[in-house]
Length: 236
Ligand SMILES: *Cc1c(COP(=O)(O)O)cnc(C)c1O
Image 1 (cartoon, protein in one colour):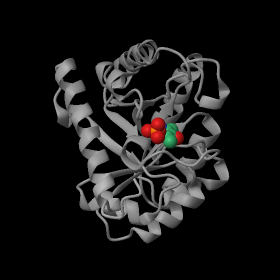
Image 2: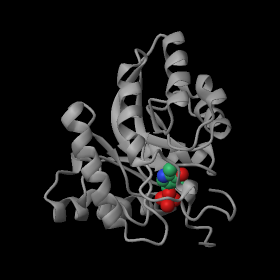
Image 3: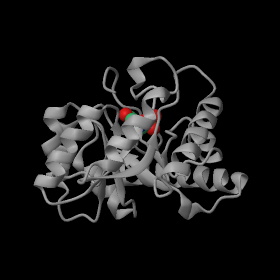
């Protein structure tokens, strides 16, 4: 992509068209409607100018995984009609900052974090939608609460005045069949909804496995690389 005639806008537009084509094909194959799926553009490591391009192309949901970077980008993008999703591992001391801009936190993986987010949401006079991030394998690097801890964490979020239990999020294990992992997530979501019918969100699927996620009931896909290009090494 060294051709100066190819602008960044053209690159991103091409990435978005291809991602939309893949989402449409996956919906078609699964017998689902496109509007059941929210595409979240994960913009970590990319500049606010790229977020502006995405917004101009019609993207409305943006995801970030580090508070410091996200807070700066949100400030640079004020005025754009965007919803911000926090998708990364989160320290409790960042809860106040994240509550200041996030519409949805996908990565609630422990009760202490839920408590901190609740406190800050109440202080800010708002209710924050939280997803429980569940671990689909034993790799702590992928994050999430083990499935055995899901009921207690979901109950803690449901009971918190400042939080809304939105559903579940997961990252497929590295080097394993994503379909199996997402089938497991679908099952966990089904039993969660028996207890909490409103907790319908299933945040699953990234650039490499969005079709498998949609086949297994994903309502939110989180896509970075396929929209914006490969991130530099060593940056998640
Ligand atoms: C970076 C990231 C994504 C996007 O991954 P891609 O493979 O670049 O599409 C999705 N979810 C989370 C939690 C991430 O950190």
